[in-house]
Length: 433
Image (cartoon, rainbow, N blue to C red; front, side, top):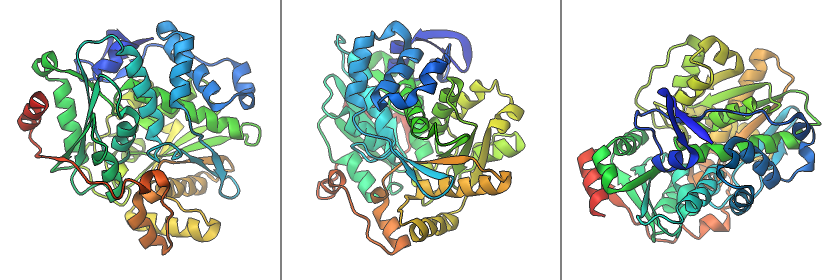
């Protein structure tokens, strides 16, 4: 698999190189040189394949011979061990539940595939690999679970102090072993900026082997393509027109959907759903991308004011705004609207949505009204509502059952290193630890 930098199409590397580098030296993002279309026969016969079988077909098309078929099948068999069911929520509205993995968030798909792939490529390395990851909530928990006790790899997770839910924080800070959490006195954007600067620090990278587990890493993005196909499999013969509605923060999830669409995914449109951090919906409306500091909201995993993967979206469309806005609609909503949507869905359908899924639900309803659409909407429900138990129970006035995998963490002791928003101190800590 050959990849290039979004800042320089002539800068090429292999999948192995891209995974371990995380970011190109020019501060771009890696993208596949070729996004192949899957055979029509495969698409027509989706219903005959299991989820792991679909994942193997998609991965083989993207990755090519760099990972032999038998090894790739083993990677996927170890990574994709839980379902992605589509749940009916009334006429024309469906929920794609992506929270059935170990950390109860969609990022389990990416983190587990990444851990398996990195472990495969890292087998003969003499020096320890350090994974740096910034999280606004769910990424860190998924990465911690995916890489826990992986030989030869340590994980350093940066998260914004006071801006993740209590149970999310427990997922980041209680595992120990090869997982270390840094509690940063700032925002997610500050965490992400520290990570990016570390990757661009050539002297630091001569001393440490660094890689990233954020959605800037291409190995996180590839497996997110899989579940779009799995959703279409479940609806393909029942829906003539499918619209995917994607609650969005760093926009890796939507980017993966666009890659799936370029591979032949039978989807007619995408909807980007955000909270008050609406820089991409604003771009889709007016053609100007204006990054700004993130705003704390109820849907905290989407509190991103300068989404990294927007560069990949631009790359997919050749920076052509008028074409992108024909394929993607964008909507943004307040916390008050999000609370009301959660209450409405619970009262009408007895279904508990987390705040991020509720933003997606609002966007789907707005799209239906604006376009007078009779399409089938598929809303990505990205996290289990128990991860935001305090907020959800307060809004709904109802108890949220906590799965055992999460409940067991609540009694464990938090262990986190306090870190200011200061690159020099962060750099020194990395070297000394």
